[in-house]
Image 1 (cartoon, rainbow, N blue to C red):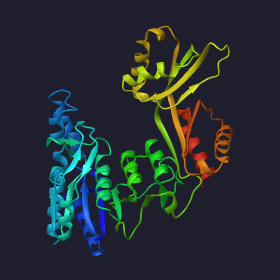
Image 2 (cartoon, rainbow, N blue to C red):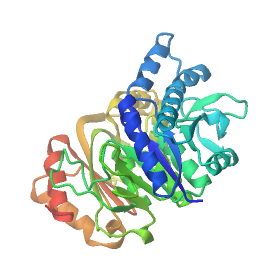
Image 3 (cartoon, rainbow, N blue to C red):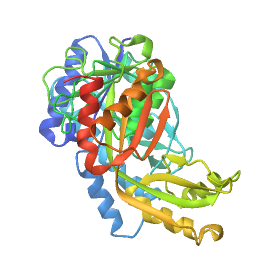
Image 4 (cartoon, one colour):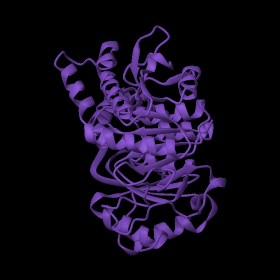
Length: 408
């Protein structure tokens, strides 16, 4: 049995007309010889509306009944999609997460999938029926509904594709693939035919909003090819390919750099003359972590006197105040000078060339130098280089790097 999992995001099912268009794509894939499992999000705006309803009764997040309310959004879409397919003569039925079941942890609003039982879905597929599954949700061992947090529907779809040994997981969204840069930032941005899991993980973590890192990590773990394509273009994934996220060995084309991202949601704080001794990084980062703030880059300067050093950290801009307050509560840091800056951006290159081509870092730094962009901090991974720069320089820096590494 050749199984294809297709997932439709909120904008793709925003109203009955769009649900009908999505149903036509499912029917087309059945004609192409696939047994299709559909995963749906709530209709665009519905999850936010349900969240606002809950807020009328206080801060109810991380709450069993908050998740019960939010889960209703996908249930409505699943029922409507099943009805649309039935109207077209396609056998279909809606399936709630607890009916399959998709097992999850009990971390309400941010649960993790622990197990998916495939037997019921396989039985439905064998009867030539399309199961329309509610994304974004799971069920605890006690039978309570949970929601999976950001990227939950994508993660649901990839998890189902993995357990069903699907040929592919197609993610229909409002863009037609993964681009080398945000086209709003760089007009010459190019759509990629393929990109590796590692590269996509880095790009997603750096702010490319096409896919959530959780779904990519799951695809990489189980070897599920993931295709990103537009629900608003004619054709389906088997006819009009978008971008396929796959193993490096399976890539059709190989770029030195696959993507350039610019995140404007950055801030930095610098601690002057902290003691230069073992454990100082932990002493700085622990209170920030305890305050729920994610530290990204850390740069510790060489000690001039062997006793003190300066340390610079980058954090999300909206969390800067919380990070500083957390440090001020530490007795040893009460009198330390802490400098902050909010007009900061993070510019990143992602691609297997970072690992394979030693000229990439030097070329990046030379290009930025030639256009007068100063680098405040640098961090790297196997397939990524990120720098902190002034936000005002972000756009011209991204355009310059795209011209050098990818072309006009």
